[in-house]
Image (cartoon, rainbow, N blue to C red; front, top):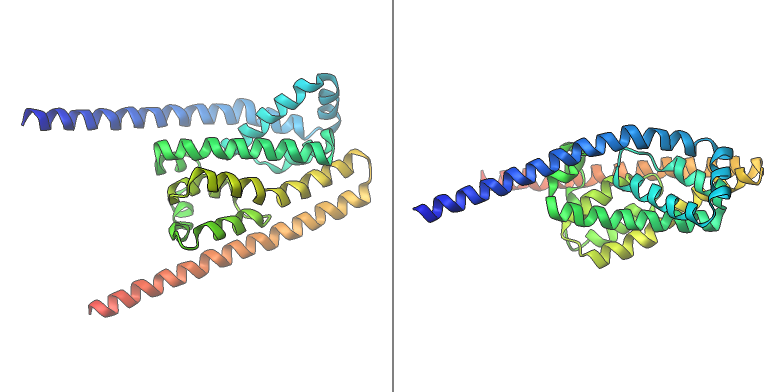
Length: 247
């Protein structure tokens, strides 16, 4: 009896520690978003000032930017598009793409192990249960990997939500590393190329590139919504079929 009580106290203590850690993280995340995220977006949104900072900083500016990109990926409420455009403007298309990709992959892996440690409660810091529930079809191991790859590949899909959801599906870290390294490239390239065109004052090409990016992103978002709706209908059909069988 005493052993069972001790075990229950130990489990309760673990839950209290986990809940406290998540609460502290939420507060820190909100503080980072307010005190770092907002000034960061204003800074990156001023291209000339951002480029001057890169030119003055030399190599250390590359390290700083990697940190900025990792922070943006991890703190999901900070939008990534302005940062990717700023990278293309300040560093050029090639270097901007490599920096954004490196930061995105590093941030995605940090998210992976963070969610694996704290579970769905870590995801709920940034996303509602409804949004998390909308991706439950990705838990099907038979088609999970290819679906995640396609959703990450298509511009316009909610990659932040996917990054936080994937660790809940049971996907291994090496598979996720490969997928996030390859599938993020199209979305990053379209943004950094547009930013680079602005940097060299090729405004016609910049407008075309950004217009194509916006159109592809809109199509990608529609595809994503259709995939979610399709799987919702399939699940509803299975549930109705089960109820009919029981009756």
